[in-house]
Length: 390
Image (tube, rainbow, N blue to C red):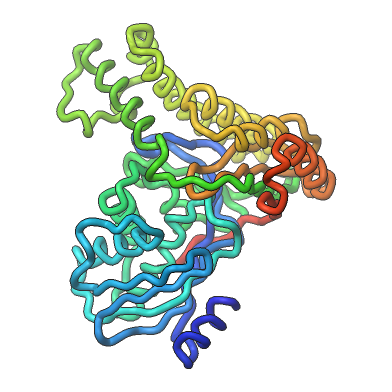
């Protein structure tokens, strides 16, 4: 494993352990968890590896294959003002864990990802892989929900991205050949098994080659626009409301939205339209998976992608082009673009019988539209897998 080899090169000894966290996909349920929506998701058999060893002086020293600069800080003095580099997610993890537990042992290590960064919960995966290791060297045992909450706290309150708990929950709670059906309002979930009669599927990941940063994107602004719409709906309906940041779409019934949506500014109405229709798609998708109907589940995934483009108004031109190509490619049950992180990608549920033709068709059409992405664009075929065990 590359991270173990690099660790030995840097430190002249073997790593004490290797932590792993899978990436995730969310075929139906995107852009809803931050307002306590429902989601469906799967962990995939690619992810983040972290080869590590304890440091008794309390220093955290991290090297990454994906970034050139080594990062350092002390477990007791995590910078309050985040430096703004790749290691902020890990500083946030140290900070969040240190609020709940007394950290005495530092850690050194090397991080590596088995796919290009971006769109598959890379930030949540790297936080959770790091947290597993930091807990191990400090003899701390977290429950599943503690691990999810700590990772969520790090990204929301230290890094400053208005996330929900979709990513963290998928990479922790998922089970191979099961669909995770999660209600983010209370953390309750169901693992819906893949029925024997369901048509076979694999997961295709198409990396656009696009690079940009989530915290610097308009992700937070769109969450605020949704919240503004919800806040206004509460006022129009005479509902009680408190602080702006406490306004949640989950607490406003859909019929209230339908009654007053025409009074909302157009951007706020579109954000609400996505949230309320996505909530319905998730419930329909869970039922389709329960029946073993992957075609219907795939169609709902395509509809989710359409709404993310036209109602949530996210996705770069490269991601949108990939989505358009997927909608007319034989053998793809459904797909959408995934995430808005360091790099943009699309995911698709595919019929394995069409794997090679799908790769050829999507690649040819995409690079015809964006020839400058030659050498940056890539395709990977994955399977579902179990989530991490804290």
